[in-house]
Length: 288
Image 1 (cartoon, rainbow, N blue to C red):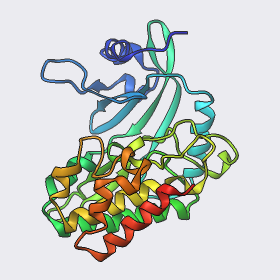
Image 2: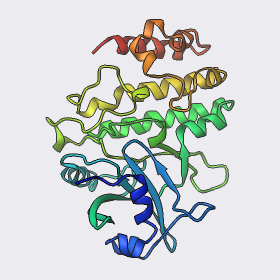
Image 3: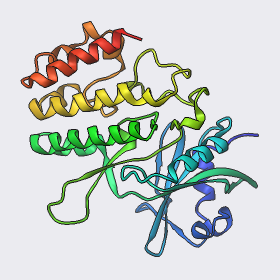
Image 4: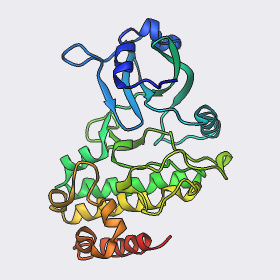
């Protein structure tokens, strides 16, 4: 079976009544661009559309490649999350017969729509506001601790999967929400292999599919936290090291940390805490 490509989904989703089985989506309408075409956010693994039905909004995640055992994985993740309350996660449903494309049914994830902006976009706007970045770093610590405390790992912590949202009231602090649960680890998946390796600019250089347990997010969590703290103390790092696909560190820095210009800069950061974090990150890079 040839898996749908982005243009196949783009054609199919223009007719919600015929392409969906789910009643909410079937009765909904797809958010459009100014040209009248379905608005899409595309990545390496999925195309994501916004579907509205009255006041309700969903993100519809359409997969660009077939992943072995995906339905069972999502079912186990859903079962583990059903008994938890984690503000950083959003409700979702994996639909095996989710969207009809070229006469065949393909799976989708129907996820609660989160109104926010990617972590890198938010940081770029607030890069000169040290207080906001330090508040975000503190929230990040809490988010990561809550995942670990509930025996979870997201599996692909990176700028595009971390959304910064408003709390809804004037002057309220922003909050962090996580999307894309394709690589999430829960205890019932212990002993299996990770279905993907995450964004290289946030992952340990030696990560393999066999690394799949509660500690999966540790390296990415350290990268994000160190970056936020470093930018709060030295905002010009953003203009020098941000590429659009990272915060301020990248895969090349992890592969050769002792030759990394960015890491050497962080080890001289005005914040002594950042200096210690950078040295810890360098130690992690050369370890297992």
